[in-house]
Image: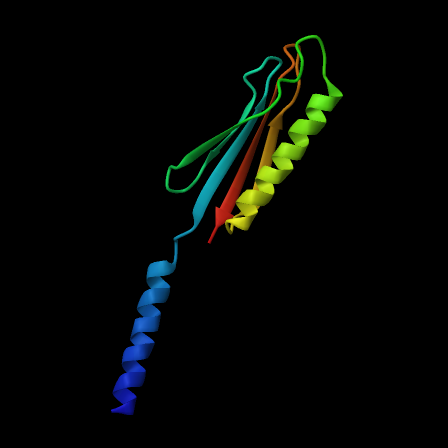
Length: 112
């Protein structure tokens, strides 16, 4: 009887392990810092739930360092909030400021 229980438990463990493989979940976060007021952070979680956080525009007549710092603080708080949900940051890419004063930054998080 002990041997049967051991075999059944081992089989169940193997099945659960196999079923849980490939269950990696991703979340993405896009930060849009534009020269006008419509700047925002958009988060999309693996269940398609979305969250939008308004941030400062960066200034149409040039970069405003105070606004950039305030945005950076908000971005850091948001990354920490996502990490507290069990996600790990795995990549970041940025399209930098250009003639039109904009910045797009994309973050990818993984949760296993």
